[in-house]
Image (tube, rainbow, N blue to C red; front, side, top):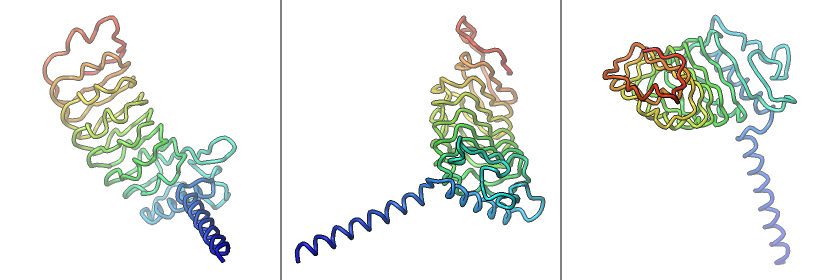
Length: 251
């Protein structure tokens, strides 16, 4: 009888373990099929928010059931997972989709030149594999909170309505960042928060409300623009010593 109870207990544990494994796989998004479901949810979300003048995302799943063949979608070699999405200039308005993080292999996201509004949702912070993010030319606002995107190499948030200080994202996301364009927003405060950024080569902070002294770390960049802000003081001569790499400087 003890053996029967032990067997039943063991069977129960195995069943629970299998259920948990299945649930985890479904949540974490471990296949192209789960990626496809996320895209179809995104399509429904966009169509609900955009009743007219829709983009080509409306074609998804009509001519082909393979998401790797859909407009604006890039898959990894062998069509194993979705790694890129380009929906720039796609007549998208309204708030951002709240489940990009379910595309667990997403590396490239371009939603530029639309009319997205509201704030960047925390879901985007969970897209830990992103290396390229372009949200430029929208009407997004709020304070910038991108601390989860530590793998970013290129970031373009230009021509939006972001405001506040950049200290909530910089230098936290600077580990691999090469290009950052924050121009044409309403950021204010000091630029000293870029002191911990050693990799950037192109940094555009123009047309904002930054103030104080100009960040002297620009000497390690290739291109640096801070035009149309409220900086004061002088630019130290030490910025232009032999190790200065700047080729373009816009004050």
